[in-house]
Length: 402
Image 1 (cartoon, rainbow, N blue to C red):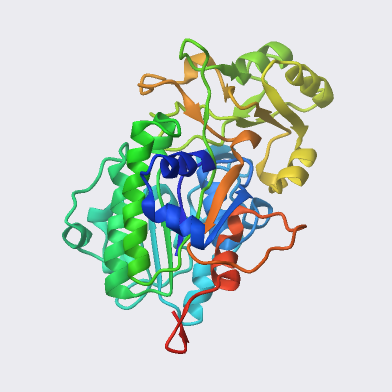
Image 2 (image 1 turned 45 degrees about the vertical axis):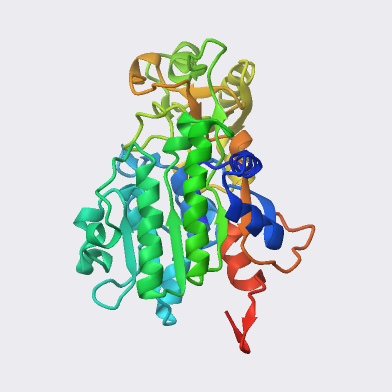
């Protein structure tokens, strides 16, 4: 079982363990493996979840954001349609080999991508979202009656309950279905609101700790990782600290001449206002690309400003889905389009967000010891299934691998 803890930089687990909120995880770290890995950049949800479930970077699977500019359609669209996926998932390959698969995601935006290529219906694989658990059918999701199974109501998409539903359903289905592979993907609602070590964060991680213990008791070998970390992106007064790129580029190049895309954009922006640390921009024909890059790089809070070719080589991105330049901000700065375009009314706490290089380090924890990893191997979060399937030393019980 691989768990993608959305938005979980290592400090969340470290501080919750230190506070005594995660006794099972403390023991798991002691007897298993506690590693650090790098996520995909942009450190957003869709690119990283699809890297984890394909074992490949976005240059291979094609999903390079939650949102992108489709040049062919001349439209800005959500990247949640399986038509955008260019590589098969691990799940589809295992199902074809006869394995039983269960995939549960918090938000429905990921469900069709994660379940692409799976056969549903009676006896088929199971794939559904907590967000729309009440709408799950055997024909579409391989399962029904999830509210009765868990004893829980449909959770709000802006709540910790959404992630808890993922684990509650996972535990019930682990017991009933005994799948060969299971993937659970949470939401980062809590991490956007609470810093590591705070009461709100520790309570959330304590909840997960209890479910992980139950899942191991049911026979799961656990591998925990994350799609990205999380950083405070506000000033001393608690106001969002934002570089509004469209406003800057309108002055540099001409009003409306540049199209700025924020790949963090998705249907659920209340907790981050579509403000992250990664952006791409499409320049008009004839624009002096290097002059624009120099001007942007001189702005305080810029981590990297790169050409498309440079960015795609460095971050392993598909060139046909990235603008002429890529902009990455530093740890405590966010990137926006124009100030007037961002609705920040949903921010009830100072902004915490992600997307850049400073949110790239994530945990990779195994509930059992693993074989040594070569020092030269760059460990990525999308090595999670490789670690669990190929490197884990499972205990032997009565002559059989547990």
